[in-house]
Image (cartoon, rainbow, N blue to C red):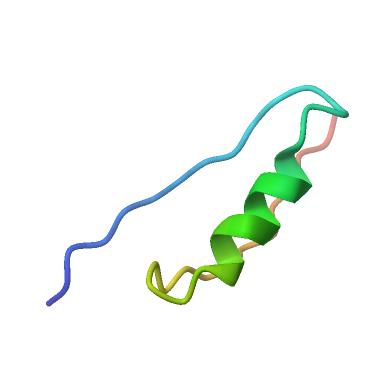
Length: 41
């Protein structure tokens, strides 16, 4: 089985999380998948 890596992107609003995520997902060499999660208060 391939080694798997969990990457968590967390930062304040406006820090570039979406930009970073799009760049990483666009790199076909990395074979990344996107998972949406959320929290409630």
